Length: 386
Image (cartoon, rainbow, N blue to C red):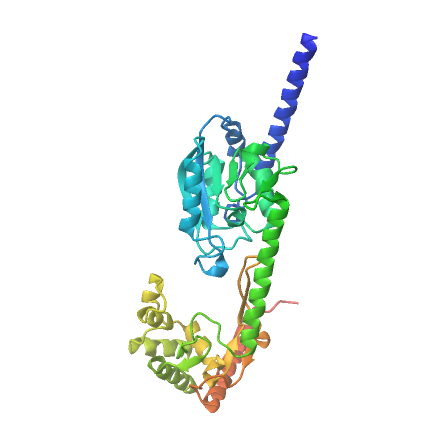
């Protein structure tokens, strides 16, 4: 009987070891912790998983905080970054098994995707073994994408041997052995709520915010209200921020640019004239006026593309032109150009800087020069011998 008991114990151990190995393999087969880590070798993962601290050990702990992209890095429903970090610090201070090593924070980053600078760095440190536990204020700060959040909680963290704690939901992955199938999160209201549904609601919230925000902005565009960050060069925003008013400091420069183009000057020739007169580029002008603080704009220079965009923009006729670019908070899509025929153009919303006649003349010159370049390009293409 003793031998049978011993064999049963060995069999159980082998089964558990097999399950651990499967988890480690899952981590090794994970191709990335975010877009920046695509294709990296995860050979260190197995060794790290073997170094999982026992329950009585002290975990090298990281705090992760995030503010939503839709709030531009300002305080949102998750509290300020400082508030989030303070809550996590207080929690760690009361847990003798946790030792704070570093704080990671993403300011103004969407929760719907996990390709965030600080998060990617945290995952790299977790993979190397530097970090063994992660503490967040609440699950929404961790992520609002249901599928990806569940993937981290149910597969990646257990495979890496990383302990995950969400303070607000009173969730500690060590309490449930890394399995979320039967674990329920107790909210501060004392209601019992399934963790996967909590994540699902976060996902719905992200979709709802993205849809509502997009709809509101679209309605403002269709009413001819300005919703951009910066007014077009030659204009400034009105006091309420929804209208464009000529900025005489730069409006005269816009008129000169159109006049020079009407004289058949190339974009490069116009750039040389602007630089020769020491006229600040749009980016440099905004930096000088305090509209932007990024040091990169302090030395921004005129470029032919900048001139081209100015002489092709109907905004100088007094028309509100918006919707030139599109992005999606929900799917974390970056800005992409929108076809000209899909732009939202509302006419006569503000005072014109350029007369209709000179604008049309310049458009004709632009078209002729463009057609000429295309013709020359086609003539210079090597012809296939048949």
